[in-house]
Image (cartoon, rainbow, N blue to C red; front, side, top):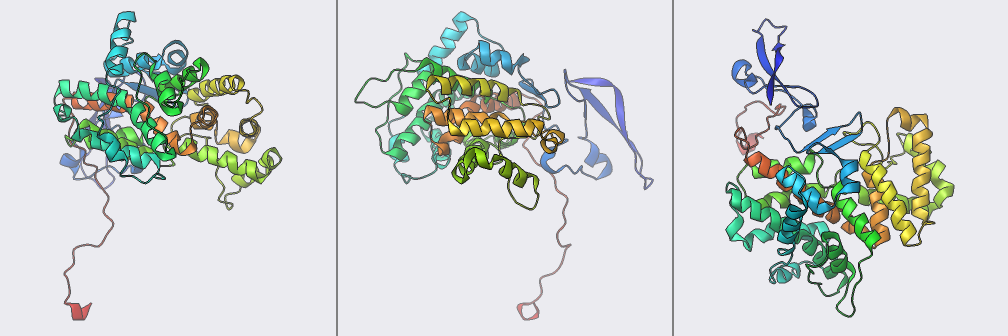
Length: 436
């Protein structure tokens, strides 16, 4: 962070003295005005609901240019990472700042693989949940509960503790997600196999069984790996900000990540792909392709209450770069599984065509986002709809950890404490009960 060659001056129309505030330049992206001394000098706060114009931190991990439709991990375009790297390389990049060479990749992959098992007693913890519990409820509990099993790595201020916690979380999330799935359908848990890739191992734990050998389909393996890469980090979104805010109190890494999972659960965030697939299934049930035009007209009618899921994004005002990659992956997976005529995929293409041509959607820049296609891919692979957000959490864990570690290492970090504009009652005295 470097000072800009100019300052911002805040002046008031009530004749209060003006004040100068430093301006900082990022390497790319908007400059920021430093308002840290605002309250001390003026007695006022800024008001920014949703923090849409507020930089809460400085970060060197992920950069998004919503107008260009650009997403960079440590400077590398997501398109290049998703087509030229695997998830383990992406994890190394986000955690340590650089892409590994062949030797480092082998060492890092091995380090992750030897931590894939979870404590056997986690099974008893899992069995405390109802079989029909939502997987995100289960994962929130399991991840938070891991801190009870790893007392040797719960000091967030200790760099070694943070490092081993990072590896444990990245390694064990696929195991926990698969356990939550198997528990829900009443099948035995599958222990991880370290000879398999990260994505291949997850597929086997999800869909294998002890009665027969499981062969990993390389097309599905690569598709899942790409899903993980595309969801690994996304700057200061709601769940990442939650992890940072939670971690700022000094709580252990497992608790901070569990908080991120809880935030991700929301339908406006990680649950969007689940909501998107549910929307497609509802359209299909009501008449399929014959009802697409009618459905889109309802979307345009503000009084209908019908929402178009999987289109538009808080940040991207152009085509989500992840959506293009996910669309390619969707075609590859459906072709591999002989599902090219999948009715939901045909529906999605029809919806996309209308959205890209109709002035209503074009003017509002409602382009497809990554959730639009990732749900179809996961459904084709065999992942149930209620587990979609769990897959998202699995992938995003590495980004959360990288952001958490960066925050702890920042000498300017403090416990988070947002301010408020109070609109309640002024001070008043409590009247006797017979006068109320």
